[in-house]
Image (cartoon, rainbow, N blue to C red):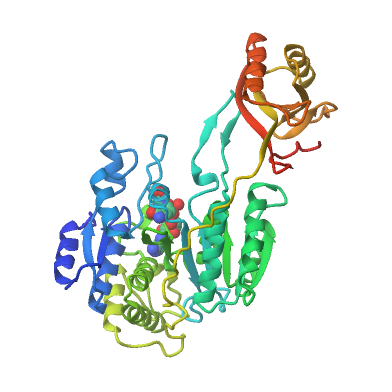
Length: 499
Ligand code: NAD
């Protein structure tokens, strides 16, 4: 079966939609199973009466291979930015260095900060251990370890920066509460790991509590991510809306989709102030590509979310109800086929035709699509501007590449430097090893050497430059520095473990 990107088909579909202005959608057929499931989904949307002005763009594998390491050409960027709505099949990121994830690039470049992933079970028609599951994951989409800022610093050590910002937290948490309000949901749960990452995850948790106070009618709760994820996997029916930083959201939403029945069922919307992208949560599934086996449901339901976003909720409801009736009739793709609950196993395109055959009908046993899923889109509120804090430089962490022992390194550093900074601590992988380290602590060649200023208010950048000059003269191999500030008198840096 030929499953190359069907731009001719897209153009045909585009012509066949009777589209007024303001209905433009950039469409990418993607890689792997992408062309099959996009073709199936667009056929259903078209048959349901969706008013879409399709602008085809090509992104992904072929573009990467042609030497464009971002996976998207500037012409496609222009089309995307003009359309503001993007319907995207999964794409493959080639393995190996040099290629950036296009998904991450698009989400971040277009400011699509909220990733909304409803995960619902369809028991008894789709096998699941969690028949009452109906939750929505709202994942922060731009920050955290996905800033993609990584460095090799020494022979032994590599670093990835985790960036969490106050405006980023405020936007996503407020979006989660506004989503709960608009969709008649009653609880918002936040997961972080702020017992360990007290500053970054601590900020996310703090902002969650601040914002929650503005929504007294919505319950709120916080769990540490490890026990929270375990509880969600065990009793997902206890959760309603869950808001998380980027990495945790990525992991937890795949788990939630899988335990609802199949990773192939879950749609997602990536929403920002200036546009939105709609896709399935799964990847390009190269293991089943070209075999007409893929479940198009995740992408089709993402298409329904897109229609809500574009102000076509009636068409979205028609699509959802026909899809629910198909599932309820036991007409399933291979990933959810089960002898007990399925009547017919169909391939991707025949499954789409079965949905089309049911357009205009509603499920009898499953709850029909309601205002709960086709609520009005949420207006994205830009975060409030805050006055800058009073910032005092009180010290500097200097990261040193060395094979010395902690005591040898401390002696060399103390001999090399003078006031106003003095060496107060050395850590290795965050654990204090000087003064009074433990001989059992395993050490690499990467040392954080903390210098604090003696006087307060302390120092300026001239003092930092002088300190670095001393270290340079003493042949100390420093590889990075980090200023230590107090913000309004509060330390803006963590202690060493064991300090
Ligand atoms: P995957 O989601 O593609 O596949 C995981 C498993 O789920 C496979 O066994 C696959 O057959 C199955 N599966 C996925 N979607 C299915 C569907 N619709 N119907 C039936 N079964 C389905 O994850 P992966 O194998 O880790 O990634 C493959 C490629 O996809 C990689 O190149 C990765 O970078 C890319 N990817 C893209 C996106 C995206 O475009 N948004 C997301 C995740 C991964």
